[in-house]
Length: 260
Image 1 (spheres, one colour):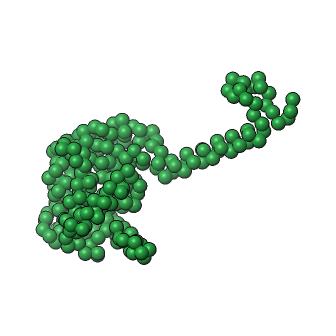
Image 2 (cartoon, helix red, strand yellow; image 1 turned 90 degrees about the vertical axis):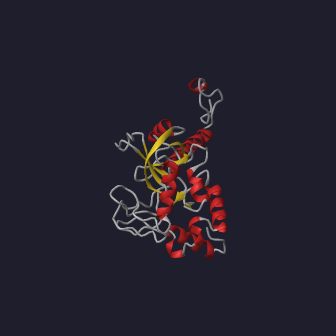
Image 3 (cartoon, rainbow, N blue to C red; image 1 turned 135 degrees about the horizontal axis):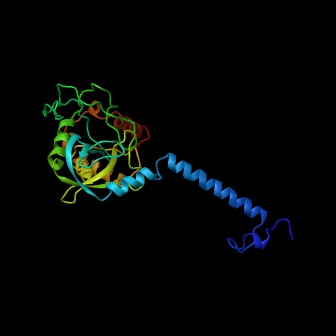
Protein backbone atom coordinates (compact mmCIF):
# COMPACT_ATOMS: atom_id res chain seq x y z
CA UNK A 1 0.00 0.00 0.00
CA UNK A 2 1.35 3.43 -0.93
CA UNK A 3 2.37 5.74 1.91
CA UNK A 4 0.45 8.59 0.22
CA UNK A 5 -2.86 6.76 0.44
CA UNK A 6 -5.29 6.23 3.29
CA UNK A 7 -6.61 2.68 3.77
CA UNK A 8 -10.10 2.47 2.39
CA UNK A 9 -11.55 0.74 5.46
CA UNK A 10 -10.69 3.62 7.81
CA UNK A 11 -12.76 6.28 6.08
CA UNK A 12 -15.06 4.30 3.84
CA UNK A 13 -18.10 5.30 5.88
CA UNK A 14 -17.34 9.03 5.55
CA UNK A 15 -15.39 9.39 2.32
CA UNK A 16 -15.50 6.48 -0.16
CA UNK A 17 -12.59 7.81 -2.25
CA UNK A 18 -9.06 7.40 -0.77
CA UNK A 19 -7.39 10.73 0.01
CA UNK A 20 -3.78 11.54 -0.70
CA UNK A 21 -1.65 13.18 1.95
CA UNK A 22 -1.54 16.40 -0.08
CA UNK A 23 -5.33 16.51 -0.36
CA UNK A 24 -5.71 15.87 3.36
CA UNK A 25 -3.41 18.81 4.09
CA UNK A 26 -5.42 21.03 1.79
CA UNK A 27 -8.65 20.04 3.49
CA UNK A 28 -7.15 20.76 6.90
CA UNK A 29 -5.92 24.15 5.65
CA UNK A 30 -9.34 24.99 4.22
CA UNK A 31 -10.94 24.03 7.53
CA UNK A 32 -8.59 26.32 9.44
CA UNK A 33 -9.23 29.18 7.00
CA UNK A 34 -12.97 28.66 7.43
CA UNK A 35 -12.67 28.87 11.20
CA UNK A 36 -10.60 32.05 10.90
CA UNK A 37 -13.23 33.54 8.57
CA UNK A 38 -15.99 32.72 11.05
CA UNK A 39 -13.99 34.39 13.83
CA UNK A 40 -13.49 37.53 11.75
CA UNK A 41 -17.16 37.72 10.78
CA UNK A 42 -18.17 37.27 14.39
CA UNK A 43 -15.72 40.00 15.44
CA UNK A 44 -17.25 42.37 12.89
CA UNK A 45 -20.76 41.59 14.12
CA UNK A 46 -21.77 39.92 10.86
CA UNK A 47 -22.70 36.64 12.51
CA UNK A 48 -25.71 36.64 14.82
CA UNK A 49 -24.79 34.99 18.09
CA UNK A 50 -27.17 33.23 20.48
CA UNK A 51 -28.30 36.56 21.95
CA UNK A 52 -29.09 37.96 18.50
CA UNK A 53 -31.06 34.84 17.62
CA UNK A 54 -33.00 35.28 20.84
CA UNK A 55 -33.78 38.88 19.92
CA UNK A 56 -35.02 37.80 16.51
CA UNK A 57 -37.43 35.33 18.03
CA UNK A 58 -38.64 37.88 20.55
CA UNK A 59 -38.84 41.04 18.44
CA UNK A 60 -38.47 40.55 14.69
CA UNK A 61 -41.81 40.96 12.94
CA UNK A 62 -43.63 41.61 16.22
CA UNK A 63 -45.70 44.70 17.04
CA UNK A 64 -45.49 46.67 20.29
CA UNK A 65 -46.81 49.94 21.63
CA UNK A 66 -44.44 52.90 21.95
CA UNK A 67 -44.51 54.15 25.54
CA UNK A 68 -41.83 56.84 25.40
CA UNK A 69 -39.91 58.85 22.81
CA UNK A 70 -36.40 59.77 23.98
CA UNK A 71 -35.11 61.43 20.82
CA UNK A 72 -36.13 61.41 17.18
CA UNK A 73 -34.31 58.11 16.71
CA UNK A 74 -34.70 56.47 20.14
CA UNK A 75 -37.91 55.01 21.58
CA UNK A 76 -39.14 52.70 24.34
CA UNK A 77 -41.51 49.80 23.60
CA UNK A 78 -43.92 48.17 26.02
CA UNK A 79 -42.15 44.82 26.06
CA UNK A 80 -39.73 43.79 28.83
CA UNK A 81 -36.08 43.59 27.86
CA UNK A 82 -34.82 40.54 29.71
CA UNK A 83 -31.25 41.09 28.51
CA UNK A 84 -31.13 44.55 30.08
CA UNK A 85 -33.40 43.77 33.02
CA UNK A 86 -35.79 46.57 32.09
CA UNK A 87 -39.61 46.58 31.98
CA UNK A 88 -39.40 48.17 28.52
CA UNK A 89 -37.20 47.73 25.43
CA UNK A 90 -35.24 50.73 24.21
CA UNK A 91 -34.88 50.87 20.42
CA UNK A 92 -32.32 52.83 18.42
CA UNK A 93 -33.34 53.24 14.77
CA UNK A 94 -30.96 51.67 12.29
CA UNK A 95 -29.27 53.83 9.65
CA UNK A 96 -30.51 57.24 10.78
CA UNK A 97 -29.16 59.97 13.03
CA UNK A 98 -31.54 62.64 14.24
CA UNK A 99 -30.15 65.80 15.86
CA UNK A 100 -29.60 65.29 19.56
CA UNK A 101 -32.05 66.47 22.21
CA UNK A 102 -30.07 66.35 25.43
CA UNK A 103 -31.90 68.85 27.65
CA UNK A 104 -35.33 67.80 28.78
CA UNK A 105 -37.83 68.60 31.44
CA UNK A 106 -38.29 66.17 34.32
CA UNK A 107 -41.06 64.50 32.32
CA UNK A 108 -38.66 63.63 29.52
CA UNK A 109 -40.02 66.18 27.05
CA UNK A 110 -38.23 69.04 25.33
CA UNK A 111 -38.88 72.37 27.00
CA UNK A 112 -38.86 74.51 23.87
CA UNK A 113 -39.68 73.60 20.29
CA UNK A 114 -38.67 76.96 18.87
CA UNK A 115 -36.31 77.37 15.93
CA UNK A 116 -33.34 78.01 18.17
CA UNK A 117 -33.76 74.60 19.82
CA UNK A 118 -32.54 76.05 23.13
CA UNK A 119 -33.27 74.00 26.23
CA UNK A 120 -33.12 74.96 29.86
CA UNK A 121 -32.76 71.78 31.89
CA UNK A 122 -30.16 69.01 31.70
CA UNK A 123 -31.20 65.63 30.37
CA UNK A 124 -29.77 62.27 29.50
CA UNK A 125 -26.28 62.48 27.98
CA UNK A 126 -25.95 61.19 24.44
CA UNK A 127 -24.22 57.98 23.45
CA UNK A 128 -21.83 57.66 20.54
CA UNK A 129 -19.42 55.38 18.81
CA UNK A 130 -21.32 52.10 18.65
CA UNK A 131 -22.43 50.12 15.67
CA UNK A 132 -25.55 51.75 14.27
CA UNK A 133 -26.06 53.50 17.58
CA UNK A 134 -24.58 56.97 17.41
CA UNK A 135 -25.54 60.56 17.83
CA UNK A 136 -24.33 63.57 15.99
CA UNK A 137 -22.04 65.40 18.29
CA UNK A 138 -20.19 62.78 20.25
CA UNK A 139 -22.50 62.54 23.22
CA UNK A 140 -21.15 64.48 26.18
CA UNK A 141 -23.14 65.31 29.26
CA UNK A 142 -24.50 68.84 29.33
CA UNK A 143 -24.21 69.08 25.55
CA UNK A 144 -26.42 71.74 23.93
CA UNK A 145 -29.39 70.52 21.94
CA UNK A 146 -28.58 70.32 18.25
CA UNK A 147 -30.31 72.26 15.52
CA UNK A 148 -33.65 70.66 14.61
CA UNK A 149 -33.45 68.15 17.46
CA UNK A 150 -36.74 69.19 19.08
CA UNK A 151 -38.54 69.08 15.72
CA UNK A 152 -37.26 65.56 15.07
CA UNK A 153 -38.36 64.51 18.57
CA UNK A 154 -41.81 65.99 18.00
CA UNK A 155 -42.18 64.26 14.61
CA UNK A 156 -41.40 60.85 16.07
CA UNK A 157 -43.58 61.49 19.14
CA UNK A 158 -46.53 62.55 16.98
CA UNK A 159 -46.40 59.45 14.81
CA UNK A 160 -45.52 56.77 17.36
CA UNK A 161 -46.35 57.58 20.98
CA UNK A 162 -49.05 55.23 22.33
CA UNK A 163 -49.30 53.62 18.92
CA UNK A 164 -48.25 50.16 17.72
CA UNK A 165 -45.12 49.75 15.61
CA UNK A 166 -43.71 46.63 13.98
CA UNK A 167 -40.06 45.79 14.62
CA UNK A 168 -37.73 44.58 11.90
CA UNK A 169 -34.14 43.69 12.70
CA UNK A 170 -31.19 44.12 10.36
CA UNK A 171 -30.60 40.65 8.86
CA UNK A 172 -26.89 41.19 8.17
CA UNK A 173 -25.71 42.56 11.52
CA UNK A 174 -26.07 42.02 15.25
CA UNK A 175 -29.25 43.07 17.01
CA UNK A 176 -27.70 45.24 19.76
CA UNK A 177 -25.47 48.26 19.99
CA UNK A 178 -22.70 48.79 22.51
CA UNK A 179 -25.12 50.26 25.04
CA UNK A 180 -27.54 47.36 24.82
CA UNK A 181 -30.23 49.10 22.84
CA UNK A 182 -32.11 47.12 20.21
CA UNK A 183 -31.12 48.28 16.70
CA UNK A 184 -34.16 48.14 14.44
CA UNK A 185 -36.31 49.43 11.64
CA UNK A 186 -39.78 50.41 12.85
CA UNK A 187 -42.86 50.22 10.65
CA UNK A 188 -45.94 52.34 11.33
CA UNK A 189 -49.51 51.10 11.10
CA UNK A 190 -49.85 52.44 7.53
CA UNK A 191 -46.90 50.32 6.40
CA UNK A 192 -44.38 53.14 6.13
CA UNK A 193 -40.97 52.84 7.79
CA UNK A 194 -40.20 55.42 10.47
CA UNK A 195 -36.49 55.37 9.61
CA UNK A 196 -37.28 56.28 5.99
CA UNK A 197 -39.81 58.96 6.85
CA UNK A 198 -37.40 60.76 9.16
CA UNK A 199 -34.88 61.02 6.32
CA UNK A 200 -37.45 61.69 3.59
CA UNK A 201 -38.97 64.64 5.42
CA UNK A 202 -35.67 66.13 6.55
CA UNK A 203 -35.69 65.27 10.25
CA UNK A 204 -32.66 62.95 10.15
CA UNK A 205 -29.33 62.33 8.48
CA UNK A 206 -28.76 59.06 6.63
CA UNK A 207 -26.09 57.42 8.77
CA UNK A 208 -24.09 55.40 6.26
CA UNK A 209 -21.09 54.63 8.45
CA UNK A 210 -22.24 51.04 8.90
CA UNK A 211 -23.44 48.61 6.26
CA UNK A 212 -27.14 47.74 6.27
CA UNK A 213 -29.68 46.58 3.72
CA UNK A 214 -31.30 50.01 3.26
CA UNK A 215 -28.05 51.99 3.02
CA UNK A 216 -28.37 53.10 -0.63
CA UNK A 217 -32.09 53.78 -0.26
CA UNK A 218 -31.47 56.04 2.73
CA UNK A 219 -28.75 57.90 0.84
CA UNK A 220 -31.16 58.53 -2.03
CA UNK A 221 -33.85 59.79 0.33
CA UNK A 222 -31.38 62.18 1.96
CA UNK A 223 -30.24 63.52 -1.40
CA UNK A 224 -33.86 64.17 -2.42
CA UNK A 225 -34.68 65.89 0.90
CA UNK A 226 -31.56 68.03 0.63
CA UNK A 227 -32.35 69.04 -2.95
CA UNK A 228 -35.91 69.95 -1.96
CA UNK A 229 -34.67 71.77 1.18
CA UNK A 230 -37.07 69.86 3.40
CA UNK A 231 -36.92 70.02 7.17
CA UNK A 232 -33.49 70.76 8.59
CA UNK A 233 -32.06 71.17 5.08
CA UNK A 234 -33.82 74.53 4.73
CA UNK A 235 -31.39 76.34 6.97
CA UNK A 236 -28.86 74.03 8.64
CA UNK A 237 -25.33 75.39 8.73
CA UNK A 238 -22.20 73.20 8.51
CA UNK A 239 -21.30 73.87 12.13
CA UNK A 240 -24.76 72.61 13.17
CA UNK A 241 -24.32 69.25 11.45
CA UNK A 242 -23.11 66.14 13.31
CA UNK A 243 -19.34 65.81 13.58
CA UNK A 244 -19.31 62.50 11.72
CA UNK A 245 -21.35 63.99 8.86
CA UNK A 246 -18.99 66.94 8.47
CA UNK A 247 -15.97 64.61 8.47
CA UNK A 248 -17.48 62.40 5.78
CA UNK A 249 -18.47 65.41 3.71
CA UNK A 250 -14.93 66.78 3.96
CA UNK A 251 -13.44 63.43 3.00
CA UNK A 252 -15.74 63.16 -0.03
CA UNK A 253 -14.82 66.64 -1.22
CA UNK A 254 -11.10 65.93 -0.83
CA UNK A 255 -11.55 62.92 -3.11
CA UNK A 256 -13.43 64.95 -5.69
CA UNK A 257 -16.80 63.39 -4.85
CA UNK A 258 -20.10 64.92 -3.88
CA UNK A 259 -20.62 65.25 -0.15
CA UNK A 260 -23.10 62.99 1.64
